[in-house]
Image (cartoon, rainbow, N blue to C red):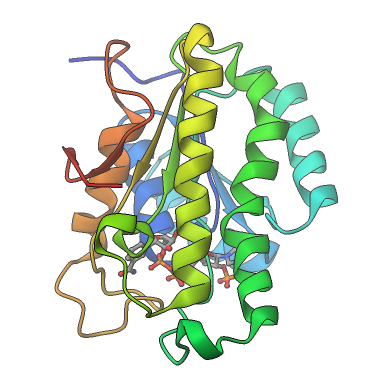
Length: 236
Ligand SMILES: NC(=O)c1ccc[n+]([C@@H]2O[C@H](COP(=O)([O-])OP(=O)(O)OC[C@H]3O[C@@H](n4cnc5c(N)ncnc54)[C@H](OP(=O)(O)O)[C@@H]3O)[C@@H](O)[C@H]2O)c1
C-alpha cells in the first residue's frame, strides 16, 4: 500500500458537505489536511472531531472568491510546509434550479462563475508553485455532470456553465502541468445528500467523496486531463 504520511492536502469549502468528508478520508490515510472554510469559526468547529480523533487536520480561513484570503493562506502554507501535494477545489455555490437559460439572471451567472470557476483558477495560480515542489502533485476539480456538454439541457444555467468552464480549466491545466508530473482531473461526486444536493439525494457524502479521494490519490502513472465519477470516465 502507498504511504501518504507526510503528504499535505488542502480542501476548499470543507466546513460541511462533501468537502468535510474528503478532509476526513484524506486525514485517515495519514495526510496532514488543511480544512478550508470561509468562516474561520465554522472551520474550527468542523475540524474539532477529527483533531479529537488524533488526525492531522488544520482548519484554515479561505474564501476562494477573495484573492487576499488565498494569498494569505498560500504564504502561511509555504512558510509552514514549503510544498503542497494535493489541492481539492471543492467549494461551489448556486445550484440554480429555479432558473432557465433563456431567462436567467446574469448577475447570478456571474456570481456562480466567480466562486465555481474563478475560485479554482485563483487557487491553482496561487498554489501551483507549491504543487511543483511535490513529488506527486494532484489537483482535483470537483465538477458535476451538470457541466457535461454531452447531456446538457437548459436547467441550472449558472451552475452548469460554471462547471463547463471548470472542466475546460482542468483540460488546460493538465496540458500545462504534464511536464511537472502534476495530475489534474475533474470529478463528479454524483447526486449527494448535502445542503446543495438536498435530502432526497441517493448518495451519501461517503459515496460522493469516494470519487474525489480516487483522483487525489492516483498513482504517478494515473490519468490527467480527464472527467470521472467513481473512477470511471464521464463524457465531456
Ligand atoms: N451535492 C451534490 O449532489 C453535488 C453533485 C455534483 C457536484 N457537486 C459538487 O460537489 C462540491 C461540494 O458540494 P456539496 O454538495 O458538498 O455543497 P455544500 O454542502 O453546499 O457545501 C459547499 C461548501 O462550499 C463552501 N463555499 C461556498 N462558497 C465559498 C467560497 N467563496 N469560498 C470558500 N468556500 C465556499 C461552503 O461554505 P459556507 O458554509 O461558508 O457556505 C460549503 O462549505 C461542489 O463543487 C458541488 O458543485 C455536488
